[in-house]
Picture 1 (cartoon, each protein chain N blue to C red):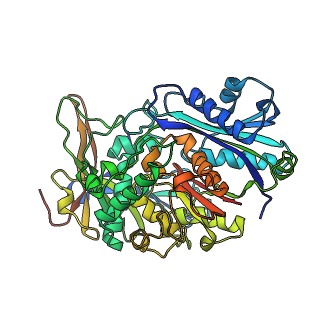
Picture 2: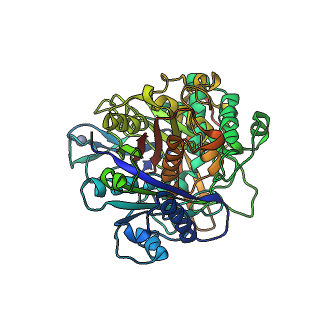
Picture 3: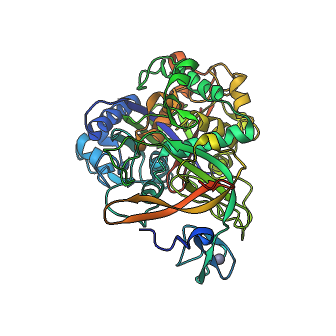
Length: 396
Length: 141
Ligand SMILES: [Zn+2]
């Protein structure tokens, strides 16, 4: 158990395809978070940026990019890249600085302008890069991996296409209530079924889109929050950034084979399950304590997998949890009240931060029509390419 | 492009990995420098042929043309290919590969036995890029 840090402010740029640059989006989100916190940018001691290699800016999307846009004021700066977990690592970096006494207030920003179509690796012949190899040798896109998990669930657990469609129905209904979401209209199961197959068994509406978007947080020490007049802030109690444990036995992006379990037996938990487990351990809570969860629904089927990996139910029981309404608004543990990636789409460096923005608004009781009554504890779960875990637990 | 990942022809075609001489962990794609078992650190990695047959862990197909670096002729209509993840019992690992030409998702089931066969990934006037394919056992098309 480590110390807690306060979430003083949360902000986003609405997600969509806006045709502007990531710096503009990130600056809007940062200014919104600063205004929400009531903190002057010049009083921020450190800025942490979540990098992206997407959109043609390899390595350039750094904390300093946003610091320049907000006006150079001499703050400490850090930039992190961890694929889809970049936002969580930015939060982890900020938290470490706060707990180490290196800063009183830290601004965390992630933003991206996503390219059109399938994500693809950077150019050039790079056979030493597993991400390049899976495209070159197999043509294995991200949806292909999502589809492998979906088909496996159907075969092993008896999940149906209708179950997958109902995840989209649930998340689209919630996204319709979220002013920051890209897609703000309800979707029916029939519409999911009628959408074209991308990678069997998944349809277009089972798979999240790519988006432009940005999210930002202002974090501070608990002392600063009190001095600032915020006696009972939303607090971050755990940030999990774990790597897998050898042998990693579930086929996962971007690898074309699992580790062999011939020499070492697999551990107790899969990688995805270990991400949440590490957060629970650090926070000193368990799945029964959660009021809500934001999980990484790259595909509808993957959301059901997360229910099991978070310990919300037993293995193979994810679809049952959905069917009985447990994960819907009003259920015991609503999942993806923001609308999830189904409603936002992917803006890679922003999404793990956006998940924490949703927890913040929920825990403050400011989530409007999608508010979870009496929310006290929220968890985010996400996973970055190449073995980056990501989970944050926030409490009020 | 992916040197020494497979070898042989016809019945003797095999995927090649490496096996750690110290702990016996198997690596595919091949690992030639350090064993990836964190409790080992062995540096003697010996080439090993993987099992020829395994069972389908899962499968899918690609209904849209993947982006580069996948090579396909934009002049030709897109023909969906099948992707099959195969569990190898002896190695206790899952290896992904394209299905052999003509194998569709309708031909597949989780748990079905498949075997590795040589195949063509892409060819142009100068070069034929070979690869491995998974094919249901008993299908000889
Ligand atoms: Zn070894």
